Length: 129
Image 1: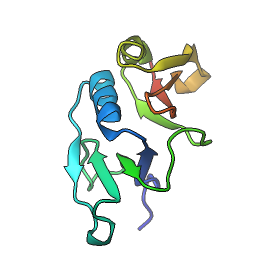
Image 2: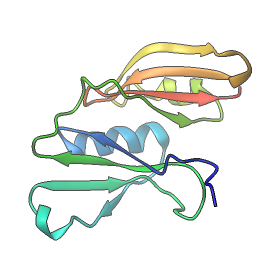
Image 3: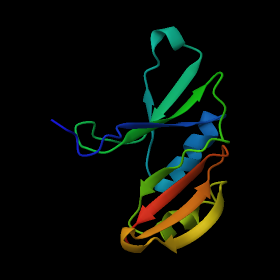
Image 4: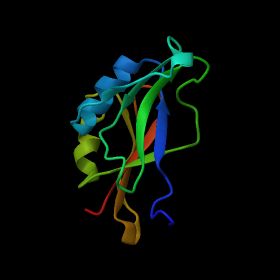
């Protein structure tokens, strides 16, 4: 059986997991939860998961702080669902991030905003309104 959405996981690498946790929880008004660290990576990795239902189609993911993997400077952008991009966009600077591109139309696919988190990662929001 072919999955509707082949993307099943994402990781956003961070330098300071506590600072990143505060940013994402504040911007999205949610709580991240601890993920168990594999035994061979104890002391090398910390992970916090976004809320998800693993049985449903669509990507899930986590914030990851791991030695040897630096935050920022990558070319991957994760776009998060939003009812209205402007809502999360308004929370960015107060949470310590930076708005790179205010909400803009993308035709039949709605609207996007592009921002930078506290760790230097570029992320986006996508909404139909």
